[in-house]
Length: 321
Image (cartoon, rainbow, N blue to C red; front, side):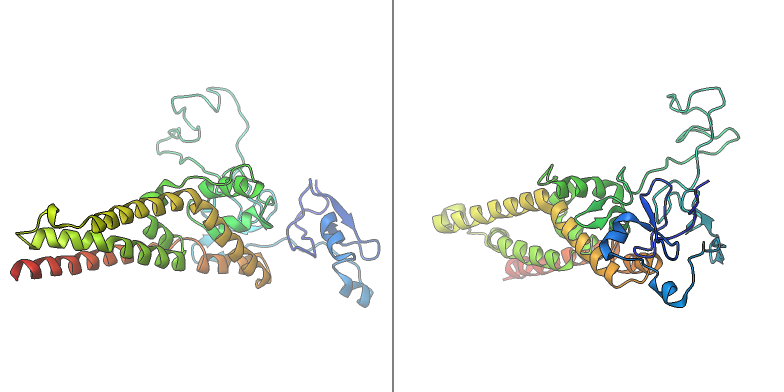
């Protein structure tokens, strides 16, 4: 059994794991991560030295019931988690250990064998497919100086897609990963991912680029005597260049969207970690300021409807004239 099971490093306040490189203070006996000890150059429990006390193992946390039920303890680090958690919010380990294989169909057999992950349960029902929210990235692996588990909390929904790409971008293996959702729905995607100011900038730029084509369409629909021959060559070039600029803008967003989003998440995670006393407060702040904003979809739909209402107003006004 691991000697320091349930203990935290006094420097980074993360739970100590059996495979961690651990050093012990020779004066008070407090265990530390070796890198944490090196980072400060001394014991993280100096208040014990001043009081003449020695470090003692903390009592095991007794998970208190919350509004949704009794919290579950992680089988790896013993941190309390929500009752419906599939993976630990601290170490990323599965909350349920797989049962040892005891005969019958092998666990990876095709066809959805009873009791297999993603297959029917022996007595009815269906076992959901469990997805790692870190996308295979180690919880303590750093991406641009931020641990993956912290980034996952800031990203929120669909973190299993973004974290592996963030890792590859930060390592320089790929300068960019195309994001086709951002290509097709650039402004809604940015609002949805809480990239508010970039979304506003792109929205204003797209509206400006669409002005020549919108004016042309209004003329076509409202002026019975209007023909393509009446359009000057210069104006045709302007409308063509604006259309090409819109496509180029969407293409650039598609190519660099994941990189821009990674920079925002890394910056937010560092800021929240500096202003958080512990993992619980960090997770709470990440939930408030990070993640996604579903109401942004309705805002974008409202803006689109407003745009077409204004557009229709000028069309019908011209037709009436």
